[in-house]
Image (tube, rainbow, N blue to C red; front, side, top):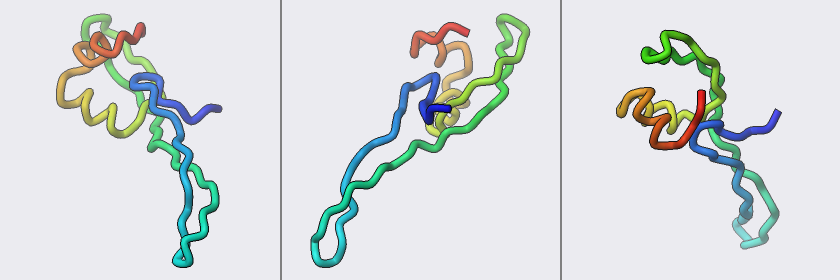
Length: 75
């Protein structure tokens, strides 16, 4: 399974690990992906979505339907 947020589209980021001697080796930073069941009150149903912790926090702040509408996600 891919490590991608279905709502915000966050993916892994590539960068360098830099040692004390300033050597650089490639590394990957993964997003904090959570599998979460979310209730959508307008449709009166529950959906399971893989989303990042940041997207979940924003969804709690703005409301589920408002945030999904802003992101252009069809549920």
